[in-house]
Structures are given as structure tokens and as C-alpha cells.
Image: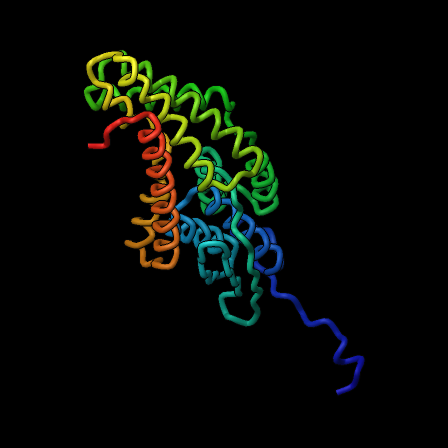
Length: 275
């Protein structure tokens, strides 16, 4: 074979979308890869990611095979006749869990699957979604404090304990926001915030506020419980994604241990009996 024949570019696979647009496999693969990294990073389960990607790939006239790992996604897009394919490996985005982004990305996948959104429009909407500003931090602080105080009341805490839990949660959560902004390791953040909240929650017992000081101490750190990682790990396990399930479960267990460590140190410092 001659050199000029070797340098001749080979034809690139073209996907025919249901809306009538035509795009290369590379364009589709890059879009789906970025979509996957953002959806998984925002707190979606592996089964949701698989379903969203497959319904979009089908609407775009191609097939997709993906391997979901805790920190990376390996995605291959190919034509239905397997005549051409494109593969890309992308790292998942490390970001706070966002139900807003999660929901809007899922709606985007249905819009593509139903033929209501073209591929070009989908890319524009995707860029708009990932630039969504986070919810106001002070609103989140207030709502988290109210929610944790409600847990205290739910566990039969009196109103003095509810007020103390509200203040201790507000202090701990605000400290959590500051530490996360400064990129402090999340495990250290959990230890410090649990320590601060438990110390403030122990004031009910220290100064004799109310009749349920033990409820105030126990519920003062509940806002740190990693419930979503635990639920996602269980969902991934049921769907057969055992590597991601184990990774998420271990991450949640480590954070829970850090929470417990901060709580125990705070109780020991305040001379509060654990039993």
C-alpha cells in the first residue's frame, strides 16, 4: 500500500437522529460522556444513568455500551450494524449532590427520546443545565436546621431540645459550608462539624435545659448522616453494579465513622455519658 493511501482519512460513522439531524459518532459519544459524568456526579444511581443514556442513544440512531466505575465512565457508541464505533473514558464530576441538576438532566433525556428536542438543542440545554447556580446557601442552611430540629421533635424531644438542636445544626452546617468552600477533606469536615454540633447540643444537659437533653445530643448530628450514598449503594447492588455499590457503601460507612468520632469526642469533652 502506498503512503498516500495510508494517510487517506477513513470515513467517519454518521448517526441519523429521530429528529432528522445527522451527527458523527464522536459528537454523540462526547455528549453522552459529559452527560454521564454530570448525572452520576449529581447523585444519580447507576440504573438511572444506564436508562437515560440508552434511551438517548436509541433516539440518536446508535447503540451504546458503557461500564460505570466509581470514578470513571467507559462509554462506547457504535452504529447499529457495528460498522463503526467511538470510545471515550471520562472522569465523573466531583460535586455536591444536586436534585435540581439530576431531575433536569433526566427530563432532557426524555425530551430527546420523545423527539421533542433535537441534538443541537440538547447540547445547548445541557450547557445551560450544568451552569445552574446552586441553591442559596443561607436558604439551605435555614432549611437544614429546621429539618434537623424536626427530627429532634420527632424523637420526642421537648421544645428546649428542639431549639438547641436548631442552633447546633445551624452552627455545624455553616461550618461545613465554609470548610467545603476551602476544599478541606470531607472526612475531616465531618469530624469537625460533628464535634462542634455535639458540643453545642450538650449544653442542654450541661445547663439543665428541658427534660430531654439526651435527645438533643443524639439528634444534633443527624444532618451529617450520608443517607443518599447509602440508598444509592443499595440501589446499585440490586441493579448488579456491585463495584459502584461497594464503593458508595464504603464511602458512606467512612463518613458515618467520622461523624461518630466527632460526636464521641464532643461528648467526652463535655463529660456526657454515652450509656
